[in-house]
Image (spheres, rainbow, N blue to C red):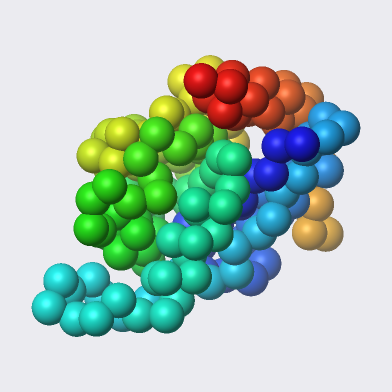
Length: 179
């Protein structure tokens, strides 16, 4: 059994990235599951503060998961501030639960380049925690407003890409667990 934790970088309940995570969960092969993390609502990281309960719960959820899937929208050519803040909380003190954790990154955005810049920044951020980040296949859904409808990913080529990603990620996580 491979247990994945899905983290959505968008705070919006009806975001395309949340729906993208749900599509990945539906596309997982037998023996794999995806639990969704519901909130990145944390105070701004400050090492002078005591760790908030929400950060401790997120750390524990990451530690308990075999791997992560992070769905990241692109805001101003980068990742949303709430996601960066959550990663700051869970990465300290080192080593944190991200150390060596297998991670898959996906994203959907309304622009023509999808989430290519945000994913590049997220990979750079995860490098600090020594995460094992899946390189291929990339899921960079552009023009998301054309590919989602009624709270579902409806574009068939995108669904095929998500299925390939889900299958590959489960193999990637299993490989890293066996080490």
